[in-house]
Image (cartoon, rainbow, N blue to C red; front, side, top):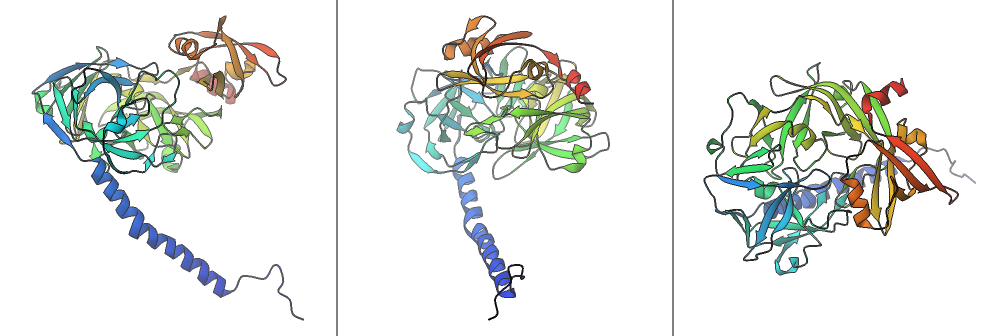
Length: 418
């Protein structure tokens, strides 16, 4: 009796079936997924401006994490809601905006956050939104669950679908924004560096390019909603050749709106990157992972007075600070408050925090002698500028450990890895 051997190669029949299944999935994506995405982008991009002032000055504040907050009023409400300004993200209503159901349902969306997480939020249609004397009408907002600690006072994101209708000038030092219907009405210094932007005409993301010393380029989303310097997705091998040093993150550092990053993370160093025709960015530290996005963030942009719009697609950069040392110091760990506990979420390998014994998932009892008993205690520590930290944490055996670490330059970490 003839029996099929275990190592016998699959027949051509099975190869044909596998090919047919793969082709079927590809055609389904072309026929259904791509048109659905175009419909979603079209729905999200609806709405515009009802009132456009010639020039409007809008003061802003910062969140504890360094995001820009602008004041919004909905319809005829007298309540002012702080919203994160985000040129790289979509309009969002967080679930702590308790009255969001008054806005009618428009469609379902698909969203990918900075941690690479996918979600399918609802889209709601707003009526009138005021930002100073600027009035938006009929803008669409995705709805999103949001349980980050220390963000109870933030109600959403004013994103690219709203921002694209105006010209913007952001003065990070004096914490004010000037908006207008045209960038020609903004005061732009002739000494400003001009950086060409490109736009995805469907999603309305703006992009810019950075060059390595070998003239290898990589495209980044222009993202004032990213509070870091650079985030870079692993994959551009030629651009990666410009990395001089890297340090592994143990645990999870990156977090998007719908969860944490699902891939291994590193902090990498680029000694020099060129922005525009002549700006040289020195000693740039970037977050790098396989699931993240290529983002150009506020830690670089806040060295300039910036002006930009979606019409001329030019970013004007007037330097205000030295262009050296981006995200170059670190306490070596991150932590978060959730479910009534403060826990270490990540530690940088070979940092002082790492060698002191700090590890992910350790429960933090106190910091610098102050007990972290609730979210307010955690948030108060988070905004404090400290150069050293003494923890009391719960170790693996359930006993309390006293651990100390100090702020250090990331340049010191790379020496430990040599």
